[in-house]
Image 1 (cartoon, rainbow, N blue to C red):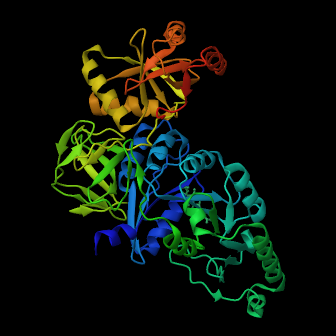
Image 2 (image 1 turned 60 degrees about the horizontal axis):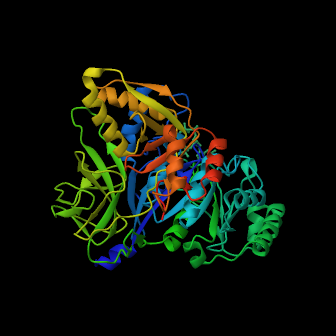
Image 3 (image 1 turned 180 degrees about the horizontal axis):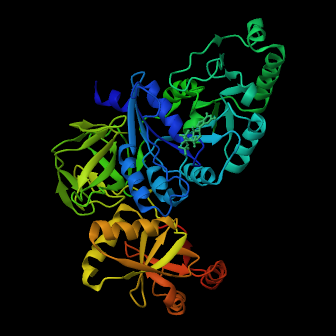
Length: 529
Ligand code: G4P
């Protein structure tokens, strides 16, 4: 197969949802369709189970599992599908944000009973900002839930999406009879519970056929006809271009657990989901079809075994072909590196590959060369954009609890920050180090890993910070900026890239500063133009 055909047959996407909506179950069913696994239950959930937040071993065990499920690849209908794992747990939201820089589209899973939940809102917002094409899957139709039209309204309002249903449920919960597929114009009837195998469906191609009445009864048949008429009247027609631009989101209904509605979703997905897209770099837009290889690191996974402290850096191939044993430029280090055993990912395995194409994810063994956001090329200096840090939610001083081990502590902190576990800020006025995280859980992970992987001990001390803002000014010499530096001295810090950060202690103080220093811009993320 030639290079262009290899690009065209790749679909790299992420499934996002609030925990428990059914992401793991859906992933597993997609793999079943691809023949990548033989039975349900093979994909391990790597979510942090409720109540386990203080159980370090559990966290580590679960992190260990997540290496295997970080990327799941399978073939369906000649299409190579790469699913990138996106942790739903809110404490790992940054991981998910970063993974979203490596996907070309997403599927959003929503629980029919719970509707739009908090994590879904946050993740969809990030996708919307980046115009990532989204398909919505409303799950658990075998259970009682919200009315389909109410739910579609809720999705439009809370998620700011413009939806168009491509399938529609017939009944729900106890009365769930199946779905009408507006995409393929047929009816699939739900015939009970089939957790292990792929559901056999009966197809009715004409909505007006009396066969529909025979199958689901007069009342349900009339109701469906009415509902579909309403759908046709209310929602815009599906238009692939609008979907690809992130302006229209098709919606499917189903039950992942019962493998119902999943085939429709998958068939439509392979039909409409985008092939690898061009990516912006600071220098220029890079197209996948370009001959020269380029790619970027979006995730780093540490090996939890202290005897094998190597890490796996996950690279998304943006352009060209990535080849084994070929020297590539590590742009930040300005150094050529070659890789003798790059990994590709299949259902639950990884294996060494000689060649990877745009859209693919390659796992590279790393002994500390990579940071999240690093770019590899064949020689051109390119910096890929779009991996910003967001303001953490929690801030604590980190103290060294074992003075004999300070070297180990700093090395450990340095490496953990490169992996993106948390953010480090160094206060300007006294050099103290502050760790910022999205969730409290990360402090436990850091403490545990520093001790077990680096032999260092730390303690934390609370620090009252409301938000970290990245500071930008056009004129560093201006009186106003100098005044800001003087007045806010105690609240200024440097992040790992040595950018100036203001650690505002309250919403009020942030607002006051914004008013008092109008020539300064206070950014909520570390990346701005
Ligand atoms: P997540 O990855 O989004 O967190 O969700 P996951 O797939 O783990 O699903 C969460 C729970 O919802 C699981 O039950 C799963 O079996 C159930 N579930 C998923 N899809 C459906 C569906 O279509 N219908 C119904 N009724 N349930 C569904 P659990 O009891 O938490 O876990 P388990 O012990 O069954 O694995």
